[in-house]
Amino acid sequence: MSVSESHATVEQSNTTQAELINLVQWMSGDFSNGQQAQEKPAEFAHIHVFWRPLPFDFFGGIGMYSEQVYDYDLWNPYRQGIHRFIIQDDQIFVENFSLKNPIWFAGAGRDLAILKTITPAALEPRCGCGMVFRRDADRFIGNVEPGKKCIIPKEGKLTYLVSEVEITASTWVSRDRGFDPENDEYVWGSEHGHFLFEKIQDFSDEVPIDRL
Image 1 (cartoon, rainbow, N blue to C red):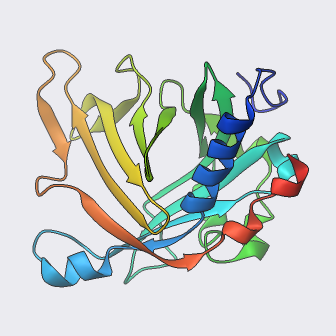
Image 2: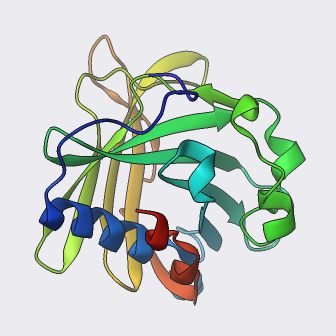
């Protein structure tokens, strides 16, 4: 599916639409694992995960910009992405894109002026790397779409990504790992368990729910 295509024409129940809005509002913010890093500095670096809503017209629907950065080097993110949220097969599906020149947009998670310079022309699709989310009581559980097709080069070899996310109104728990596609052996990722983030700044009022 190309960036230029309009939002998916799928039947949306009120409940599912409400869940999508709920997920995006919970995701919108600056998340920090400062407490975890302070308690276990040898195992976890202090990281910020920024999720910032995009204007409705960017995708003709709900989209977000994400940025992951070490606390000591806020202008040099190690991961950036653009994400398009749709309802597909009665699930919340997040289509992921990379940026052709990510350094041009460093800091967009904290600065709306930078965020507004991003256009669909700056994106490249990340095939097989979408995330599927489902509601589970007072949280959302997310996993990479099935198929082991999200391929990431690491340590001189190709690996497939296994990403696990748990989101509540105030927390973000995640773990990314890479495995060898030939034998499913672990190659990279956190060896000390999940990263535990707390929302320290809320951007949920930027979600364009009045356009939905």
